[in-house]
Length: 113
Image 1 (tube, rainbow, N blue to C red):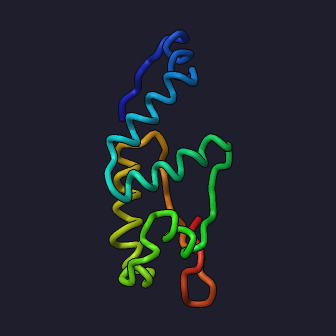
Image 2 (image 1 turned 30 degrees about the vertical axis):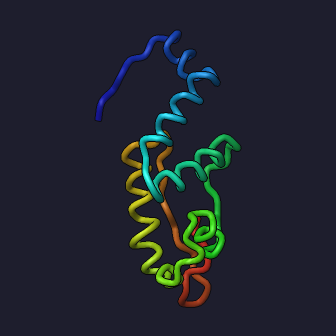
């Protein structure tokens, strides 16, 4: 853990919309593939001020751009090859910290928060 003391002028500069947009753009362009897609999806939601969002699995597949891939119709494969690597990439570089909670309906996962 690192603590950085930032003077008030620096905090103000970081919070200004112009600089924030530059930071967001740099983070989005530094990520690749599914990580970038997830970052763009969640960075937009972050500005709305809600601490969490719930997506159905089908909606999330569509938003991540893999709705047409048969192999990702199985939750375990979708999570292993798309969501988990995207979450790791976003948490390693992005300006948001993301976690995922699958929501089950019976024995199958139907949504993700």
